[in-house]
Length: 128
Length: 151
Length: 175
Image (cartoon, rainbow over all chains, first blue to last red; front, side):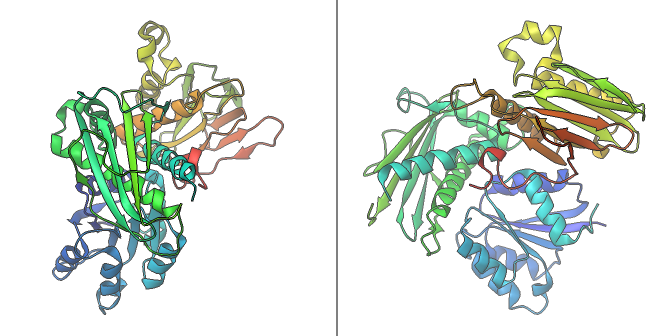
């Protein structure tokens, strides 16, 4: 099964790091889409479907919190699973993002296997 | 929070970030930032919340290129552009700052600015806390400025 | 089942389903165990130091002493027996901080970080790890089943099931 993955982070090198982990995890990805903030990601999602979104929180423009709120407010987009990947490791932020509808949360810094496992859990092992 | 606790936390989170994402350890404290005429990369991140302030880091170019090659899984440092190395140094600053603030648990969400490359030179002004860490290939310098913060 | 001993600075690779690769007394050293369940090939490396540049002559005599020379050889020997990289289950154990070591950056941790760097660049993710701490480990890999067992001094043997390492570097887990 092939997946389309959207990575939302203002750091191009972090997007590359995450992309590499996805490839090494054996996920058969049709395509990787990348956005540098929530608004750019929303614009992309108006035109194409993705199977999962990985998003940072602290980004210029629309941050991850606003982005997830906007996804959840959309009847179609709210079904897209979201995994937060953020330096914010506070309990309060984690609880907030999961309450807003994120299905997973990975704190930076993280081992590659940690991200792989969180994605496996969120996607229900449907890949590879 | 006592001054030495901020500095100890700075060391701990820097070590955690370097080990986890860059597979690099710290050999111990360094006496200072190293020779002033060494080419360097430096990055700064501002933050808001409780507390507000700015983290600045500086690293010799050779060490920065090694870290970037490790992070990007590049075979050699020579193939990386300055832009790539700079972006990795910025992300290093971002992760250290976020990990540091995550330990404060102030009850208020913190907000980080986008990290930016800054001129590498003298220590940034008005920083109450700093640490120099020996990476083997040079010293990683960390400066922390806290604003409106009661110790 | 027949035990095949992997000594210190040693590597064994087998396609015999009856073999069990076993290495003892992993202090700061690290064991890398790999297994291809389709090809039925298993391999284990027990290395002592992170980088061969400190002694190229020693690395020439025995590449299994160092992570950067031993790990690629382990994989190559497994490929020669029909293993494929994409199928390999990779687990590691060891890297303890032995009591007489001084300094902030101990050999066990350096061995682990060297391994992590090599695997990241080579595009290998782990399916399990048991590293750090202060205690020596003994580990064994069953070539037939791919099961990986480990034991500390005075403790019962436990299987290291395939489970991803968690969170951040093991030296900072829970922090």
